[in-house]
Length: 253
Image (cartoon, rainbow, N blue to C red):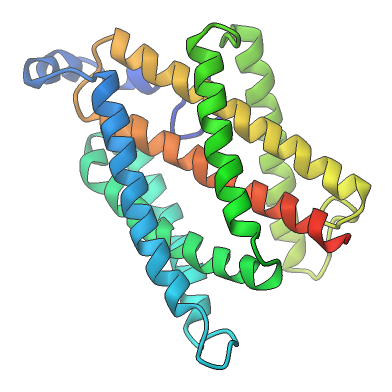
């Protein structure tokens, strides 16, 4: 079972080993439990995002002195907590809520910045993100989209390619070099963002399949938190990509 999401990878359930039997005695992973925990993580994210948004600008309308703290602190902190969660899945009941809280600071600050530059863009990105989530969930549950092995392989390969492009962008940025066209608001840049949005959205299908497989295999109860965390990772990525796409479109007006 493949997933483009590094948090929800093929070997996750195999890595649980013999501990799964012991955990089943304490309760197994359920779909409703995973959904409820995903909702809780979203609530935590919204709370800290709202706080960071309120702190982003001063009375004069300019960026507040501590603005960058929320952006970089949230981004780096969320990345570190995500790594810990991936390698210590049994800690997910604690680390998943921490990830949601810390990532909320990042999302709130960066959203405030985007909305300051392009008014109304954040609400559009939020609606598109959740609209995509529910549309793909309906398509998956109704059988319109099936997570076949070829489908998974294609999405994983595309996700890996995007990750390499972003990694190259970061590394080259340290040397003052930028990859031309794809990060600009031209047709190529918009086309690239559209492609990334589609791949991020298709990762939701793999996440649904991963969670469903965990429920069917009777994964330990803490995997509900881990599944919810993995879904949050994809939703955060999708939301950021929608922001980037909408910003490129509006900058052309």
